[in-house]
Every structure is written in structure tokens, then in C-alpha cells.
Image 1: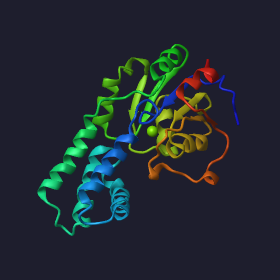
Image 2: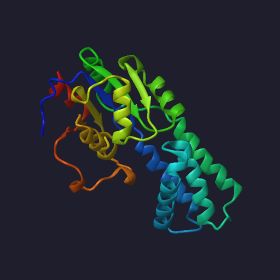
Image 3: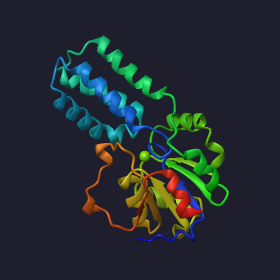
Image 4: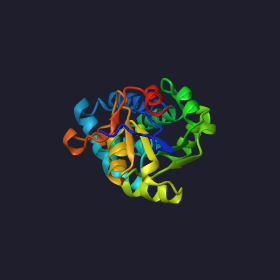
Length: 233
Ligand SMILES: [Mg+2]
């Protein structure tokens, strides 16, 4: 494990479930969706069908709430054999709108950590999701001034990071990524030869889960964002 961060000049932060709560609202919406569709199928089948639909549509819609809303509607049509009522469709749309307009909840210590680190490092936000939704959240977060650059990526593979770092003229040897997803924020970064710190959130979307044997041991895992100050200050 490389605990030496002395060459780091630039730190990339994931946003959802790293700076603020996100996955929790998806879980809540999924539960509400399941309750709406219970007349047609079992909870298990509804869960599985929705996830399958999200995966099938990911390439078409990308990440974010709007794609999730469309997948819920399509799943509702399939699970009910087209019998789902207009009222239920309207309720599903409301679930999505409620997610989009949910009050932003910053995670513990975020402001303090960013304020401190921004004095010494160049900070970036690197996130997936809907462009408009992420821009709205950043604006509402009051954190925007701590960041030199914000990038909403369509995906977080090594190639996406590589292109961005080249564009920003940041060497991989001076870059550190911080995020809650091993799959999106840690593994592709290690693949590039940059460094990563994993800050797990209590809930992880199944799509973002990786098996332990799939990742190497060369990143650092911390239990909360505040721990960054111990390693980087
Ligand atoms: Mg995240």
C-alpha cells in the first residue's frame, strides 16, 4: 500500500455518496416503486426486473435519475403486461421528480476538508450522472468555489480519466482520486498508475460492486472524508 502522497498536486473528488448523499434516495425510490407494482409481482421479481432494465438501458440513457425514471416506467409496463394504470405511471414520475428536487445533504466533514485541502491542492469534481442534475447539486452545495474544475463524465473508465487528465495537463503521478466506488473511483485510477483513496458509503448500487479478488491492494481505504486531512496535510 502506497501511503506516500507527497507528489500529489491535484485531487479529484467523486460527488455522489462521496460529497453528498445519493444512493439512499435511489433505494427509497426503489422501495416505493416495488410497493406500487406489488399487485402484479413479488418484491424480488420487481427488484430484479428493474435492475435488469436499468442495465439494458444504461447505454441508451447513461447514469442519472432521468434514465432511472424511464427504466421504472418500462419495468412497470413489462411487470404488469401493459396493464399498469395511468395513475401509477404518474406516481412513478413523481418518485423521480421527488429525487431530483430532494434537499442536498452534504456528508460529514465535507466543507471543512475541502476548505483545508483547497489551500494546498488543486481540487476537481469528477462525477457521472445527469449534467443538469449534477450542476444543480453543485450549485446548491455551496462547494463550487473550492474546485478548479468540474467534469461530468458519461462513464468512469480508465480511458475517460486518461483523456481528462491529459486535457487538464495533470500528470498521473501527481493525481489522487477520492471516492466511494471501488469500480468507478479506485480501480480505473490504479490502472492508470495514479493513486486513489476509497471512502466507502454505507450503501452501494449493485452495478458498482466488485468482487474483492478483482482489485489490487494498492489503494488506501479510509472510514470518512475527515481522515483525508491526516494523510494529506
Ligand atoms: Mg459516488
